Image (cartoon, rainbow, N blue to C red):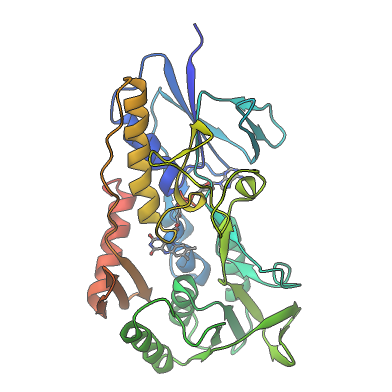
Length: 356
Ligand SMILES: Cc1cc2nc3c(=O)[nH]c(=O)nc-3n(C[C@H](O)[C@H](O)[C@H](O)COP(=O)(O)OP(=O)(O)OC[C@H]3O[C@@H](n4cnc5c(N)ncnc54)[C@H](O)[C@@H]3O)c2cc1C
């Protein structure tokens, strides 16, 4: 009798949560989990901005995968999924077949078709690109100019952390909208703008980049000079998901049913940044969803109907260097200063010690 295979693509916040939750329970005796990732550990993506800035060491952001005879770890680059033949394609390797599949490959940068954007900017979307960004910003000449494109959570955290790492640098954030963190309440935006001003970080709003060319950023007719450019101006699901011809939401995430399955292929589950969830992508959402996928699989294996609660998220926390930060609890409750920063460190500590 052959073993049945649950294949998990991606060992990040979502995929690793599915694996760990299932390993904490009883797996059917005839079932193994195969988890495939390009890295031999989980990278704590929510802290990549600190790796790039140079304020934390690489090893601090790695979580070792569980060691368990029921878990097979496979390292490689996933290049495609064939839902009809139930196969996963891996670069330079044989395809892997599955009985159940979890897609948890996260997201990549979105460059909005701006010529030169990918070529002339540094990224913090993967651990490997964050290491490259670390070299670029830390090798930047004294008093050089670093430009961060995109004033969302990642851009703001990156700018603040870089200020802590390099007091000499000129740092600016370019934003398309009227302010950094524009989806957040005005009170929080103002707090962050004031912090940026106090820490000599230039904020420019209503920027519309049309082209990047070496050290020049074209803002329509204007030319903006830069030494290093960091891209935090948008994300989209993994290219593997982009290549799937299946129903998606308006930002390219796969549409799922109430059990986090593809409606047309209920043996395929989608978690995290690849899934069309009613909230914005976050590590928190990926973990909450990962737990539910484990519950559904357990019910499916027991031939019981799955019973899921509603996913509730705790709120958003952002860091402004190591000593300050901000948070949004619910839709309107804003917290600012040392308390949200301490909470953020606490959350990180919990996820490093598998207590999330
Ligand atoms: C700078 C920054 C700060 C953030 N801050 C926060 C925060 O404070 N709070 C919060 O909740 N969220 C935050 N996020 C968002 C959060 O990191 C993501 O939403 C979360 O990581 C999504 O989890 P996931 O499981 O979908 O993907 P990931 O955690 O990214 O996991 C994907 C995994 O798949 C692997 N992988 C990807 N493609 C392939 C491939 N083709 N082949 C093999 N392996 C592959 C990767 O190596 C990775 O291990 C932040 C993101 C960034 C970039």
